[in-house]
Amino acid sequence: GDTDVFLTYFGLTVLYGLALIVGFILLVLPMLFLIARWSLAQPLVVARGDGVMKAFGESWERTSGNEFQIIVAAIVLVILPQALGAAAGFMFPKDDLLGIILSQALASVGSVLGLSMGVALYGMIIGAPPAAATPE
Image 1: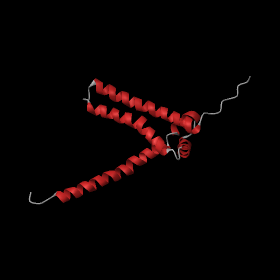
Image 2: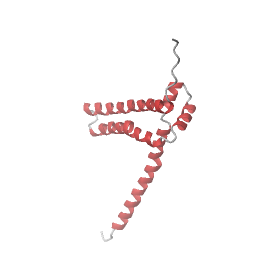
Image 3: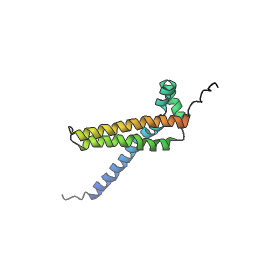
Image 4: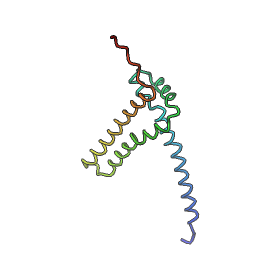
């Protein structure tokens, strides 16, 4: 057309990019933070029989200061395999056996690694209970 839209388009692109960054910060980063802080909740319920709120509270306290390391481990061990599984599901046709196997296998790997990570964190942060003294 007769009008020059370059500056308008440039301004729109900058604002659009900034809005996406803010959305990422407001949604994804808090989610990762909660994953890190509540990563011990499931092992606490299983190992000790803690109630929900007690498990959330103790997990919150015990993981304080370790959030970054837990987030990195969660991304590598849980989120990445789950994302790859979802991508495999989209890359193949819906009824393709290879796509189904890949997506299910990667989702299962992410689940197993996530549970394993919880157990490992429990052992590292809370520690194993003292061994019962054996009579001699």
